[in-house]
Amino acid sequence: MTQDPLFLTPRQAAKRLAAAGLQITEDTVRRWARIGQIERIRTPSGQYLIHRDVVDGLLSSTTAA
Image (cartoon, rainbow, N blue to C red; front, top):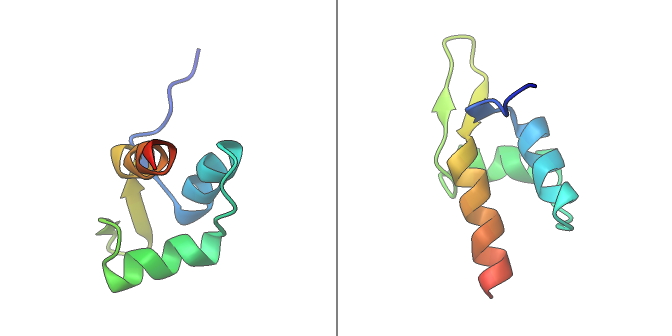
């Protein structure tokens, strides 16, 4: 049994959001991370990673609306 990763790439985050029925692209996730709309970390190689809880928070905020 595999566990979900703690940190997601923008592509993984977009796929997770799409699986919940949201039409959010990888580019949108990258833009949100770049402008600070969602919390992220940046690796030494420059890659953005988004904590799984941040993505899950987006999901819960859209289902609550």
